[in-house]
Amino acid sequence: MVVTQAQAGNVGSPFIESLAGKVDVAFDITGLNMWYGSLHALGDVTVQLPAHQVTALIGPSGCGKTSLIRCLNRMNDLVLNARVTGEVLFHGENILSPEVDAALVRRRIGMVFQKPNPFPKSIHENVAFGARVNGYRGEMDELVEKSLRQAALWDEVKDKLKQSGLALSGGQQQRLCIARALAVNPEALLMDEPCSALDPIATYKIEELLAELKQRYTIVIVTHNMQQASRVSDYTGFLLADESRTGRLIEFSPTAQLFTNPQDRRTEDYITGRFG
Amino acid sequence: MEGQLFGGAGQVQARRRFNVIFAGVCLLATVFGILFLLVLLREVLAEGAGWLSLDFLTRFPSRFPAQAGIKSALFGTLWVIGLTALMAFPVGVGAAIFLEEYAPRHWITDLIQANISNLAGVPSIVYGLLGLALFVRTFGLGRSVIAGALTMALLILPIIIIASQEALRAVPTSIREAAYAVGASRWQVIGEHVLPYAMPGILTGAILAVSRAMGEASPMITIGALTFIAYTPQGPLDGFTVLPIQIFNWASRPQPAFQNLAAAGIIVLLVVLLAMNTAAILLRAYYRGKVKW
Image 1 (tube, chains in turn brown, purple):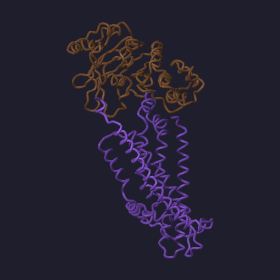
Image 2 (cartoon, chains in turn brown, cyan):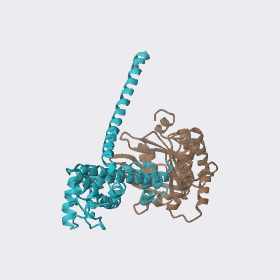
Image 3 (tube, rainbow over the protein chains, first blue to last red):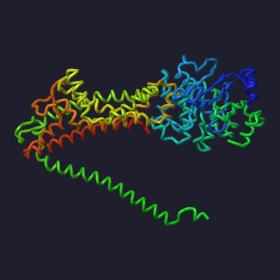
Image 4 (cartoon, rainbow over the protein chains, first blue to last red):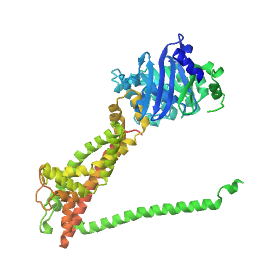
């Protein structure tokens, strides 16, 4: 911890060297703190997340990885007693600023949740809803088809677009949720343990999908599955809660480096299975 | 030895026996309720069915049982309950939406919440006194349909608010988050998702509340609903009587024929209640059908 903080004091970001000059930055996070009531859930996170790459956030339960990802699209605004301080620049704009419309932030930065949560409406309406409420004026059927194709679901549902989204299997539901997120043409996609409720085959399909989606979208994925992080991501952040249950970012590196040559003792302990 | 740590065949038998006993007790409780309802219905039908006729529905009350009808009370009830539902439903659902979806959580909203819960338990006669003082006297509405409907609306408002809040709360957070996550505004989330999913539950609460209002006699007596009128209300400012008052009035007379009239009145009240509940259940089924759970 001492090392990290010392670095933070010197260069502003402890992990800035790893990104500077190499890739575009999507999220530039500085001094991000978050509280749930009196619980300091996220402590002083400063990191840059690359654009058009997959960033994985790993760590044991309660380490703050979900709290962190929910700061990136103002989802924590909806949580009672949640408080966020610090700065999150998304392509240069501070999305935490109260002047920025949270709904607009969420349209630009989509989210896929841990448990598939389609609306109890038709598959078509599930995808069309976001576009409609954001004033989409194009051809809706085309958009629905395009989004479902992007989510690799079109062939499975094209004949039953009027059926309930909840009639699909778990894996299909999650891909429907991805299609729903893509339909509003976001720039980034936040995924909060998107495969934790899915079987291995459904998980494999989503992971395959990620590789394609990162061509167009910046992807941040929270996962408790280290194999998944190493399979799908280009960069990985490791979070860990300290003694007062405050989640802190311990290490952020290119995925290959984090898993083969971790710089922090705690990262090494975690990825070798010594705790968590 | 694991065989000794856990109960053997005897323990399984004992558990089974308890299951059977418990199911039996629950069955008894159900039968008890239904049995008494049937006895009541049988009594009422035996006494009143013979007196039911089109004339009974289209005549005004009379001193002579053979000529008495229930028209004024039936129309009075439809007027009062119709206006009550019209006022209480939007206000109640609106208050519930505000408290659940918009209001910040602090001591003021906690206080409001506690008061609403308390109000749901206040005896109806108290609402009658409030209606008398406020609507009849202060607002000068007199003993009118509108004064009665306002009083009834106040009476059932807390019930509608609480039931609607429960229904709104039952909409999963995951659905709200899903809608917010694609950039929907608060109203879009409420109007397109939360309300439609909560509507069946809200309607169930509203049905129960309105049904309760229809059977209430005491607040109507307190605000001075007339017991003997030979006209139907033509507008909200006219005098009125309602079915429970007419029934009470007949039941308290000494002549046995009026007891039959009271029973016939009860049958009419039950039919109106049933018709309203059926309508509400159909409405509920319609909203359920729109949601593809």
